[in-house]
Image (tube, rainbow, N blue to C red):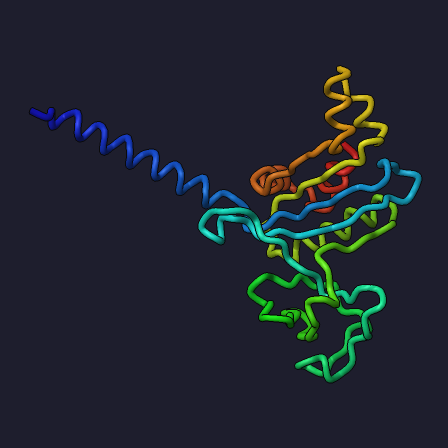
Length: 212
């Protein structure tokens, strides 16, 4: 005979685990703002880095994250002209650098939800390359974070020859692993919000994260 008390305890445990999982899922950011550094970090020299955006698997009910595109025509593509735009307001011959989510892509075309420019998917990409000083880098990342509704983790992939990462490699095995793929750092949304509760700016925290 099954013990009713044990059954209740088991059901309570399952319910608690389900609630915990729901809370963890709710705490996850909807997006990942990824920054790949192609140069060492410096406060004296321009930083060379690329930016990409990923829609979290949370929105897709599991599976892998999905890459987003940018409203920015690749080199060699035709310039944006009035006939490409629903609003007839041209921001730039290449686009506005707005983030185009997967749901804004239909077949061979994508519509930028920010400036309403219409692109062929073969004309745009999923990364944008920058070469700017650290303060401008932090400002750029903050603007992208705002475009994502302030609902994004920030992920940084450092260059394998980055001076700071080389210093941190305390063992030969760790050094080789980091040289193979570069060091990865994550600034979760929960931590960003926590760190700015006392009045610190998101842009300032991103600058500190870049140089950490």
